Amino acid sequence: MTPFLPAVLLIPLLSAVALALVPDWRLAAKLNAGASALTLLAALALFGAPPAATAHLVLDAFNVALIALTAFVGLTTAVFSAGYIGHEVRRGLLTPQKLRFYHAMFQAFLFTMLLALSANNLGVLWVAVEAATLTTVLMVSLYRTAASIEAAWKYFILCGVGIALALFGTILIYMAAQPVMGPGLPAMTWTALQETATRIDPNLLNLAFVFLLIGYGTKVGLAPLHAWLPDAHAEGPTPISAVLSGLLLNVALYAVLRFKMLLAANGAAMAPGPLMVTMGLASLLLAGPMLYRRRDVKRFFAYSSIEHMGIVTIAFGLGGPMANFAGLLHMAMHSLTKSAIFFAVGHAVQVTGTQSLAGIRGLTVSHPALGWGLLAGVVAIAGLPPFGVFMSEFLLVTSSVTEQPALAAALVVGILVAFGALVLRVQQLCFGAPVAEPAPLHGTLVPLYAHLALVLTAGLWIPAPLVGWFRSVAALLG
Image 1 (cartoon, one colour):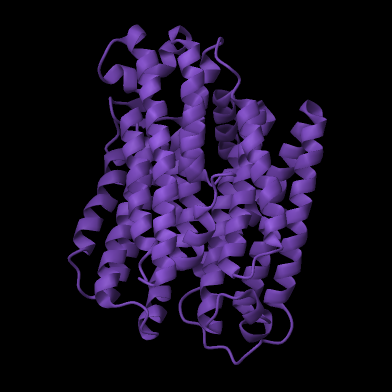
Image 2 (cartoon, rainbow, N blue to C red; image 1 turned 180 degrees about the vertical axis):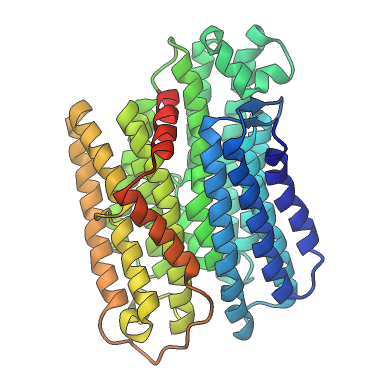
């Protein structure tokens, strides 16, 4: 096992402990960004390492790029967070004591997500996702207002129920594997399970996958299990909204896909595709109309996340080389684009002093760099060329037309409904006269434009090694 994978985990874990002891929030913000940069460097070094596995950790074609993506978004969010929290301190909304807690939890959250992605043990995966829930619950309630505590409580209850169902599904997988592999760690290890999946009882596999899809699907934000997500985005600090949409939803879906691979390897098990397509389509068709009813800018983009995770789930449910390729590409593009949008939204809320869509107007007039950046982000997430989201949605629609024309029609309708809401709102946010005299912009726009540059590049040209990675993982997913 390459030493860089333990480094990817140890850097954020040790940084969380260290940041809990740093009293100066300005120094802590810099250390938070520095630790995230070290994590990214260690993650990038994994690309030169051969695949390897132990009883608890695994590095393979599936998780290496997701680990790097998680580390990258963690770094850019930490950089954005430094300016964001400085403004919150000046407004008197956050105290140094709360910020010491915030920075420690930020690194702890990165650790839990990276651990979930690199876990080779079903139990370690479950513990990591549960720990990610607990850390984000605490950060959602950071402002300690009645609304933030209520949102955190709803998040905890709903995702707690979901993770309990995922635990039951994990136990069923162990029960199914034990007669074949014997008791102990092998029956809980991904790599060993994958090799013996053909001999595992398909009936227990089928039952386990239902619980796992519902359980981890709650964390993905799939309908009808999505109710926690808009509240958590609206009431927590905006950097947490960025990592929730950009990272945590991906990690939960990654867990579902790992279990889907077990079913695909067992020829007698059910096809998981119809269940995934049903939940994905329900999420897409629910989120589109709900976008028109939102009055809070962060809730608005939270429902957009539900829409796009529905699209990704449809892609993986449809399966096949092209649809899986589209799903993997869409996961990456949504992660980069939606976190960029929340960077822009965080600045917009601070300069206008409101999260109300009615109170944010004319950003291209009052803050041109911010306004045009937000406009580009919304254009990208709406699926317009030349951005990468257009490419992934085009591949998915093309694949569904040939495989399931009726699904393609529903998919296109759902995308167009959401597209209309995004176009409507972006005109209000970015153009016209500002509602009131805006405050000056504090913080940097570098993370916003760095993400947009990557999404634009992916829409025009994807490097051959990355295309090869998408194809190889698409083949593994079945």
